[in-house]
Length: 205
Image (cartoon, rainbow, N blue to C red; front, top):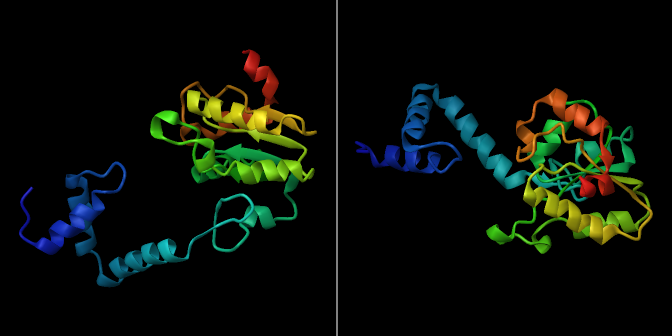
């Protein structure tokens, strides 16, 4: 792709690094921004700069937050004895959109995947086990995507907390095996939370 401007080329190269954005799409986006009023482009640049520089991760659940504790963890109406374990921040958003869950979350930041070089030490598992040890948590819901890596992660955590007085459950498999949680429709995902089953039962299926 030939460019008449190095500035345009640099902008397209940077934009094309975004997931799912090729060079042609990046070019369309950059040209669109050039056609917009200047202040709109600067507002976008400022928003991206601020989110990169100022965003925080909740010190309790590891969700994205503007403060030390996210709004979910700060909400006194949430059930702090019930924790939903998810892979990623997008899963929190997906489950919240169902309005079917009133507990708290714990974001692992990924899933165990030896093929990708991701082990338990690379995830937020230690802090989850510490919550269980505190005795305040009565139930963990494993809401990982129903893939081999998700099941491996669930089982690893399950083994880490065996011996503690805590109930474990997993979302019902209305979510098709191999699907990513964030792409599941809200009704199916909401029902899978409500109809969760004991984790031990899922090991036998």
